[in-house]
Amino acid sequence: MNSIDIVKGSGVPVRGNDIDTDRIIPARFLKCVTFEGLGANAFADDIAGLEAQGKVHPFRDPAYKNGTILVSNQNFGCGSSREHAPQALKRWGIKAIIAESYSEIFFGNCVALGVPCFKVDHATADKILAWIEANPSKELETSTDARTLKLGDETIALTLADGPRGQFLDGSWNARSALQANADKVQELAAKLPYMNFLK
Image 1 (cartoon, rainbow, N blue to C red):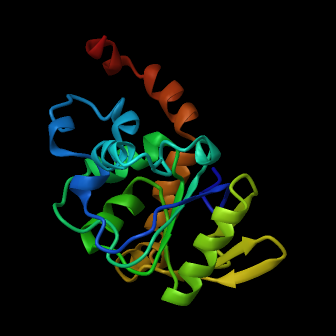
Image 2 (image 1 turned 30 degrees about the vertical axis):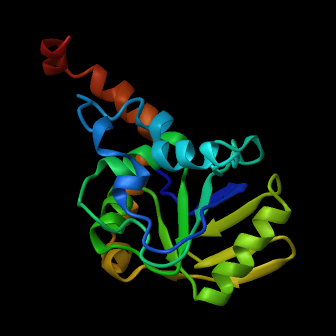
């Protein structure tokens, strides 16, 4: 099975420091039995707050509706340890994240879900954010193997977030990401197992 290496798609600029998990997915949406549907409520309060000011949040802006690579600033995903935050981002469509720094638990949860987290310095983050805002439909490409971002004609070096780095080095990333990349095949095979009949 192939593991997740390349993530391609347009970007979603989410500017700001200390964007916490309660902003990513407000607490009132945590009563769900499964994670299905969380994506529709990602950044719900931020979206409402900006709408009241006559502004549009990137997660509601049609220009970024097909985005797969989220870019932000310092301490992204701080706050509680809720897995719902990365689950909401992934179910919205985010497949990779680039930021200046992260909450350790948040990016650990992301890696467990097969969403790689990369780090860049402030100047580079600002450059990427500005490029996405100027080119909302253009494709970016990240690589976990090469630790790079292709941004137009430029290739930018990325650093893996410190916490998950061991998961990339010890091979567990390949195991997790292979399962994520082949989720349909895994579910199809699991459905044929005799004991799965008890779950129907």
